[in-house]
Length: 192
Image (cartoon, one colour):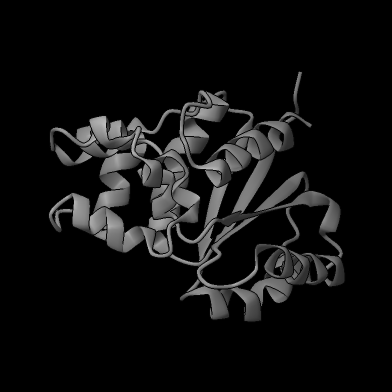
């Protein structure tokens, strides 16, 4: 039987929390073995500036950490390496999972247009999933702009994340590779 633990999610923005709440609920199944805390920063610079201090000062036993941020125009591997260095300096490298949303969080939503359709009460979006740009939304330069465009501006970051995330499937059907990596990483990380 797994012991009770805390998962501390260090995030760059509130919309990430809204997405993760549902994803984690689906992964953990509300089993009561994991308490989830969210620390939301004011953007990626604030996250990177304060992450080491937050990790060092966290004293609760049996805690694990998830750091999640958008790639934007940066290099995923460079970003991840910099974050790993900060976790190492804080002495929490082994207890931390780092995940980068390729380009933006909205890539996750564009990888499951049926979830967008259901969450925003729209129709006809899911049949676009087979178009090349939605078969691998991680390759889009500006996923948030694309999501606003295809939803005729009805997608707004925080409310949209809150509305769409309950419908995101974690069964591997999402076409966003970074979403699949997040889900599989969390499953493995929380099973330890």
